[in-house]
Structure formats: C-alpha cells, structure tokens
Length: 417
Image (cartoon, rainbow, N blue to C red; front, side, top):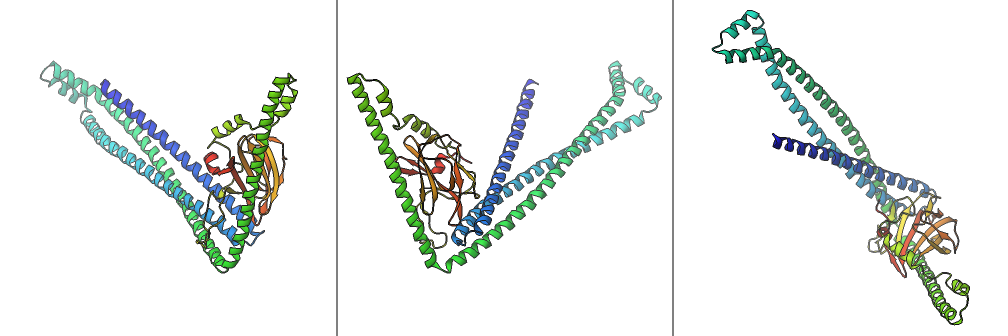
C-alpha cells in the first residue's frame, strides 16, 4: 500500500511539474510574439516616417527586408502556438473520452443496482432471502448486502454526478481552446497576408534598384567614404584619449617621485593624477559583457561586419564597425555604462556623434540631432546623451564598442532581448 502511495505521489508531482512547464513555455511564447509584433510596428513606423523624407530605395529595402525577416519569425511562432493548442485539445479530448467511458461503466453498474433494488422492493422477499441462508455467515452477508444496497446506489449516483460535472468542465475547456485556436489561426492568416505584402514591396524595390546600377554604385562610393572617414576619426580620437591618459599617468608617477624627494605637499601630486586611465572602470565594463543595457529601444537593421549589397550581391558594402538600430525621429539615446564624455563631433552622413570612455573601453553613439552632453561630462548608465535624427533618409542610431583601438561586435556586449 505504501508503495502505491509513493507512486501516486510521484505521478502527482510529475503532472504538476508538466503543467508548470507548459505554463512557462506558453508565457515565453507569448512574450516572443509580443516582442516580434512590437519590432514589426517599429519598422513600419520608420518606413512611414522615412518615405516622406527620402526617395532612397536602398534604405527602404533594408527596412522592408528586416520587416520580412521579423514577420517570418512571427509566422513561425504562430505556427508553434497553433500546434501547442492542437496538442492541448487532443489531450483534453482524450481526457473527456476517458471520463465518458467511466460514466458508461458506472451507469451500467448503477442500472444493475436499481434492478436489484426493484426486485427486492417487497419486504417479504427480503425475509425469504435472509431465512433461506444455509448458515449464519451467509445470512449475515446477505443482510449486509441488502443493508448496503441503498447506500451503494446513493454513492454511485453521487460519483456519476461528480463525473458529469468533471466532463462538463473538460468540454468547457475544450470549447475555450477551440476558440483560442480559431483566433490564433485568424491572426496567423493575417501575418501571412502581411508577409506576402512585404515580399511584393521588396520585389518592387529590387526592380527599381536594378534600373540604375550606376546611381547606386555612386551612392555606395559616397557611403564608403563616409564610413572610412568616421573610422579614421574614431581611431584618432581614441588614440588621442589613450595618449592623454598615458601622459597623465607618467606625470603622476614623476610628481610622486619629486614629492618623495622634496617632501612637498600632496597638492601637486593630486593635480598630476587628474585623469589617468580608470582601470577599475575598465574591469567593471569588461565584467558586464553580455549584460549592458541597449542604448535605444529599436530593432537592429544592420549588424556588425561586412555585408554584400542586397541587390547587386557582387558589391561589398562598407564594413560596419557597429550596429544600426532603427528608431523613430527624436527617440532618446542613453549611455550603456558609466564613463566620461571625451568628444562630441559632427561627421558627414552621421550627424552628431558622442564618444564615451570607460577606462580602456569606448562606446560611440552616432546619427544624433540633439545632444545633451559635452566633452568632460561624467555620465551614468541609462543617462540620455541625445536624440536620434533622420540623416540621408535613415532614422537610426549607429552604435559602436571599441577596446582601445579595436572595434568589437556591440551585440556581444548588450544583454539578449
């Protein structure tokens, strides 16, 4: 008996765990769907805003293709949700069938009890049945049977009533699941229609781009020059910041030696140590790899590294040393970590840019219109640096992370979405 109790307890725990896991999976799936829907809405908003400010088909194609990619992910999530609901319906249907089978068996047993009670409704039959017993033991058993017959009927009737209530609950749950499945299928169909519209839009843009390769070759050359100019400026600014820090550290050491020899006050030393590299901050920044907050809330429309032209695939686009995040006009841009603002500059094709130093690490924020900080300011993680602007028909934040003179993939530093 104890063994069976242990088995039943273990089964109950497993069923509870399975239910909790299913609830977690459902919540995670709904969260992913919500994130994808939000990203699609953000991209659609950017397409509306930018189409009024630019006729650059390449910019539009980049956003549309990102939207198509996100929409496909949403369609996949919808298909998974439809399957999950279908599996739940199958499980509930099997449970309902099991309850029906139990009710059928119990009704047969109940009918036999009723028939026996009807046959023995006359008290004389009861007495005859008792007195015809062979011995006292049989008489005792027959008496117990007759005494318990009514109780068994009541118990059986109560159990059948409970099972009918359980069946009704299962059927209600099934109806809810079926309505939910219909709603998800309708949403899935809308997503497929949206995907087809976006693919047609992409095809039209590709056809438009193919009409004048020379025009887009010239635009590409201009873009390459802007990227190269930006990269040179970043390298120059970082090298300058590192050299300044090196000189300050060297001056601090020399001042320390002179103070020790001359016994001067510590005032000279404190001045010399004004702004050396903050290695403590360097360590803190490095320890937060993969955990940094995003500088703005929007989809990544261009990733780190080299990419081919979306139409003329033999053309290699300028290497991206950061990521481009699609935003709405005037969206706030925040520092990802504590640091010092080293420079605020203006670059062709990139608007205003802010360079923030975090020890030997640097973060760079470009394509800003408004800037609310200046060189020498100390900033905290999450503090607004400025607001994004529309430049060359693109409303995007260009964000980079550098370790001394080497660019790194920002998405490896930012927390997963």
